[in-house]
Length: 236
Image (tube, rainbow, N blue to C red; front, side, top):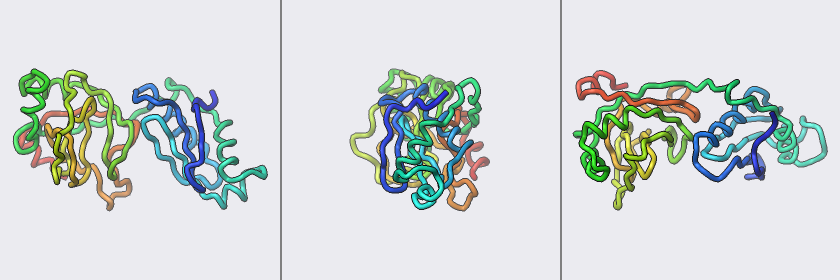
């Protein structure tokens, strides 16, 4: 099938953005990721990279190479947009090859200082909250905010909790938080306003790695509760 986006526009002289909808949902995220895979499978001359988000896909390219190699007399943007409009995109059944990852998390205590607050807000006890949070299957919709920070869908609605009224000046890398109806993992030591319920010993972002971000859009995650002792044994 061909493109399923609803709008396309030039972002700047070296990138354009395709819009696939205006909601946050797994179905819409799949559409974005299917098109992302299609571009990488059949890149045009001058293609550089893509940036998938909740409902959009930004395509970055070298305008000079595009203008000199793609046929037609249009601008670089128009040439790329025309190419993308003819790109064949596979079906979800054909390309549903999500990478599955298990993320260890030590819940509560020094690693999850807001666990009891979230549990009280949700009328749950600590064990129920941990059980519900770790039982779900999560999909990474996008990486953003800071390098390596994963925005995920799939959290049980029973755990929805507002952000902090006053953000913390520093949240430790690896902290697992809840904000509204979403859960996420802090990839760096940064200020933040999510309710922190646990922490993973895994390093979400490391600029020295060949692929600095541990997670990427389209990954499927599950959280595995671990003890404090296991947390320190898994530190990376």
